Image 1 (cartoon, each protein chain N blue to C red):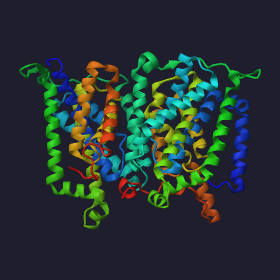
Image 2: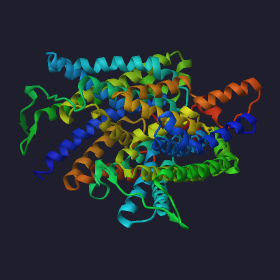
Image 3: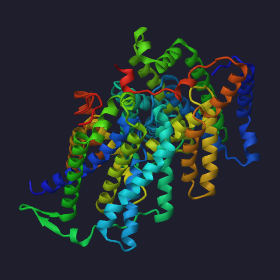
Image 4: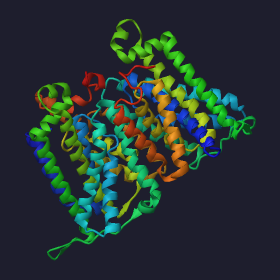
Length: 289
Length: 338
């Protein structure tokens, strides 16, 4: 038990990352039918921006707060100019466009920050280990777990208890009706995309300190996030959380015993869940919550 | 695409004749013959994608899995079972078909973006298998294998004639594709693309049609992949990766999805452009990405689709087949499955 407990905890943290990224993907996908292949690039961007700020001498906490917001601004600008004209068209176009954007982004990071990735470590105050009674655990991981938990709770409150959240959920069901009732759906789409990118940004900065930062580091989290969306069910936050945590756990436990099968285990889990529940764990009719 | 018009037939004939003389022409325009072979093979792969995206209306963003399975199928059987040239291609196609049989039933339950999402996810599993099982596949480094010699009734396939062998495959696939999309089966696929609910109420078992289209597409893609593996005598995990899927889908859309010759045009521009760019500048992914953006925003019907549109408008007829619906319809899960 003693040797498997940290692995379980690591798996849960990894799973929480998948969940937050998957919620962002799923928000964008449900409302606008866009599969955002550039989602990983937004994560990497936030990581690099935070790295640039910290190397320029700013405080880590400042970078953690500001880098996702800068990423959000980039994301919203792209949504306004390039992605918005594609909402009413076949999903192949937005898929190809965001894929092209991710290629441009990856090469740009390579030109600016080099091929090999950069060292980005959490602040000294988070680098010690904390005793959990039966084992020691790095403080940074506990911090990540706390932040991600807060984000997920805030998101649920936002979507369930605020008027904007209500409109977002309504627009997923019937965007024409919500527009006819007087909501500016274009602004709603923009905010929704921005929210997804903001989540990617926060996850990107946190992940940079844990999983490393290189031009492709965000894309490495993208594929598990897709699997999370499928396993959890499209449009369900609880599904994304349950899916993310179960995938994180599966990966970390399988890695412990059969390292070569770690990614494949995730697909086996996905296939089994789809056989039992074709819409994923909590997937209903595309409603949030 | 309507080939009833004379201009289309003449263009196709000229292109076919030109393709026959590529080994003579290519050196004069500083084009490696291996690149010309690559164009043919990716054109086949793009045709396979076109069958799904242009004629059936499902998005196979994950098709590189079938391409790579073809290459690995050929490579692994040559390496471990020492099979011959044609058997290795056949086994490559078989590997793709098995892949499609495994993931197909999962994909068929969904349409629209959910189908695309499932295909992205399931397509990537083969990448991880090739990447992780280093002992068998060589892992990240890929695997080298020798191209088996071809001897048939005293006739030998020399390396310099490899292009012609691929051209023969390309012509066969092209003709079969043309016959397929004009057959009742192909027409049914277009009906499914345009309105699946209506097609189902007319009595078509749409799941079965899409599954067969997926299998045909996987077989063509497997053939292209196996031949590509044989042409470079190498198989590597990135063949299976979603980046490769994205490239092949772009070739299809760039040339004109839902047209018979669009994918060839797309592959021609993409492969040669990519070759020139990647040897010219180290940051070639930026213009490549910009090509994706420009194609989607500027030429949503593809080059051939735009050209055909121009002629259709001049003649004032509606000779459309499949291509006109893609850019204007929104396919959503809710609309298709009430």
